[in-house]
Length: 127
Image (cartoon, rainbow, N blue to C red):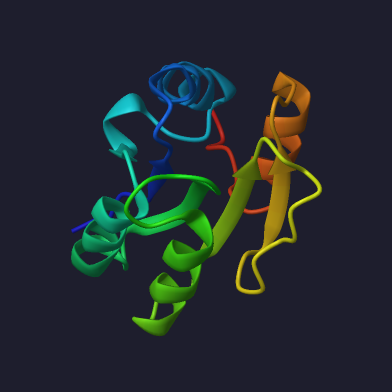
């Protein structure tokens, strides 16, 4: 049985969630059905516990209620999540979490998101 790689998007801003859900499939990195959404780090960590082997990449906001992005990243690594994490932040002067693979400053352009995702995920080859 083939496993489907998923992308977990973590952000408390509904406009950002809508943006990711529209752009990621249009760039060819994942189908809409393979994009998991969490409104905060606590919900995301529960999803990682259940699906860590299927989640290829996490894109997380930094400032969120209940559990922020720094705490999510650290806790995801502690429970054995070894795939890629992009820390997205509206405050680019923030220090990148030590367990994140990279940082993406918000607002970002389509090209910047495409380049960042392309570092970690290959687009499917169309026949």
